[in-house]
Image 1 (spheres, rainbow, N blue to C red):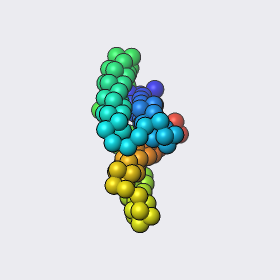
Image 2 (image 1 turned 45 degrees about the vertical axis):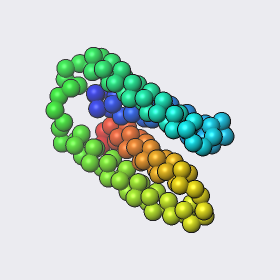
Image 3 (image 1 turned 45 degrees about the horizontal axis):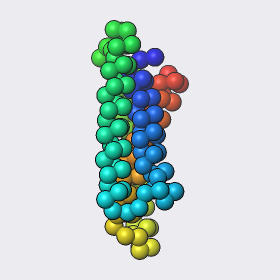
Length: 137
């Protein structure tokens, strides 16, 4: 498995763990609006950063030298296609932010919806990269 594929897996797992905990806590009502939500978000972002750094270092140390070579044409195409899918996903979800806005949701909810849009777009990029690497595209 190349370093770039490992990086896609690391991004997928860390986003699911950290932001899954954040949005799960909000959806189940375990966290109330205000300072408590902001503190949870800061903890989740800090955990995300720490997880990314540690797992990326482990991935670099466990990848043979040939797995860390410069990007070839295939890897550049995978990156371009996956980011295009993520961009289109984000664009559609941002347009969809108008729906809760018109339904009268307060601003903190809209900000959480916007953050969820960014997280979903990042997940789309990671999943697309993993699928393309596995397919050999």
